[in-house]
Length: 184
Image (cartoon, rainbow, N blue to C red; front, side):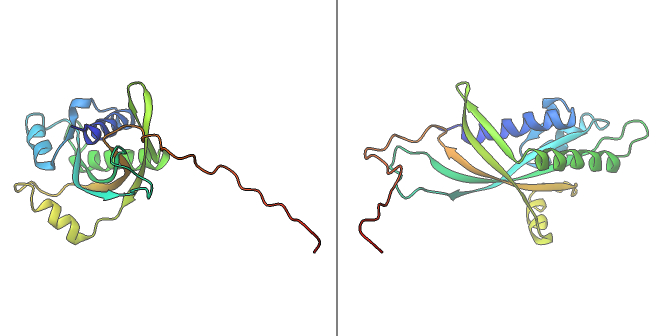
């Protein structure tokens, strides 16, 4: 069984730990209602929710064989759940967290996934604009959790399973040269 999606989710968590200085335990991988449940136990603390809400097929090379990985796109909503500690309001905290997420992925639009100590995949991070209808559909499934400020991203192309492509049998053309013969 492939762990590519889990590897991606945990890599996103690690990048967000670095960008926001939140402990990894307060960056919840799963739906926003689960993150809100965790925050209820510590309402003064800030949380981020990394929610993969859709995956889809993508990029299948014309010369691929069944041993090659399948390439997927993963769509993720990142939600800020601000705490109310000191003079900060939850709204202030959420704006700060979302700003840190946006800045992080703007400055680092490629996520390198490692497997067995070497880079196995480079995932492009593409900002997505959710329509009000998209937001309504996503949040209507969150067990009456009120809407929180969120950003959405596409992560592409994720190899499933995360492994190198199988070596092809035929030699590939590397260069072509043309020689003119005769007079013009």
